[in-house]
Length: 98
Image 1 (cartoon, helix red, strand yellow):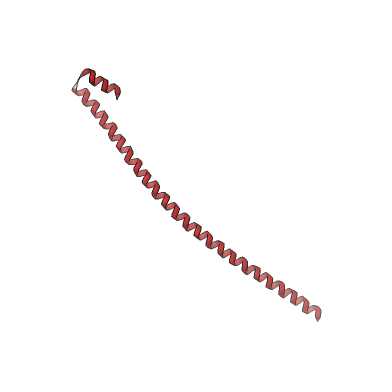
Image 2: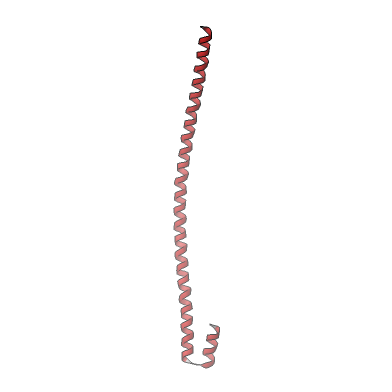
């Protein structure tokens, strides 16, 4: 770009100046396009981040529900084992007394 400008100024040629201006406008357009694409990508990344957060919240809620379910099952199993133990002890005691 610098060479083009130097050449256009040295020659004082209208075509060279127009050529330089076209190159300059192309650079500005490319920069604007890049900024638009960058903004669009950033917006999409923000949307993806929001979606991921929502998915993680749902997953965490499901894991907590599963944890509660297993805790309840563990309590039931413990109670059942106590009951079987007490029943076994009572049965053994009754058999010894007979």
